[in-house]
Image (tube, rainbow, N blue to C red; front, side):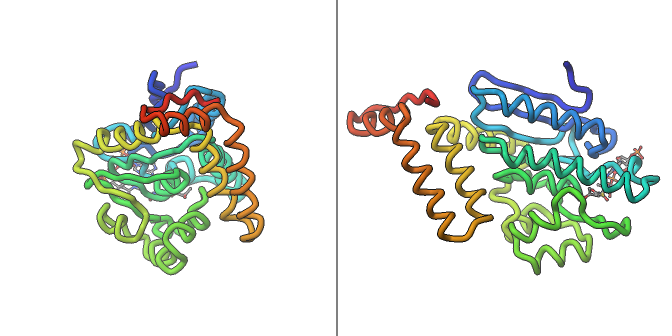
Length: 261
Ligand code: CAA
């Protein structure tokens, strides 16, 4: 079934680009868009050829300018809680995808839009990007995971400052505080992200999936359990064809050809 508010470009090289595409509302996330994103993520989770997923925003101005204020304006507490739960469910699916996810932040990433970027593994930005959690201007708080993911990424004090003030920060400042890895000129963001995605896609897919699982799962475990997770995953990889291929290729001084098995 086609998407109305997303463009999904699933490519032969294993890299899929999802563009949130409601430029008239600066790509704000309303319920239909969140449900479409969930459907696209469910399909991505079943796609055995997928190596890297990139999320970006359609149009010239925005990555995603937040949850949809026109939809939220008349909500009561129960509807708002359900809307928050929907956002959490979709972003958890994104976070748990077994392949690396990249936010290519091409413009405003505000509120739910910044939370979408935070749910991705890697965040790159164009010099035009602006980040912020402006919910306090609307007398509410972040509802799609920002209160949890933001302090984990940049520390509680910086997270509190951004959420208390609602200030928008430019891409370079976002890089300085660890919210963004690299800032690209606006017309080369896509190219820059593409090169990173291709590099990751060329590695052993089972090792990449294990890395994501171990690093994310371990962050919620005590150190003993976390170290045991790493040892287990390291061992399991030695049962794969790719491990044999990778090590033989090194010894035979040739490039490795990984199959994902
Ligand atoms: N929801 C719905 N519509 C939005 C929107 C949003 N989050 N952000 C922008 N739009 C709409 C505007 O209403 C406007 O629509 P019309 O043309 O029909 O009037 C259109 O997008 C263009 O926006 P502006 O005219 O405002 O563009 P601008 O360049 O002057 O300003 C902006 C850009 C600074 C991003 C401004 O649009 C803005 O402040 N947007 C709201 C940002 C925000 O508060 N986000 C947080 C939402 S709350 C949230 O996300 C909660 C959560 O955690 C789940």
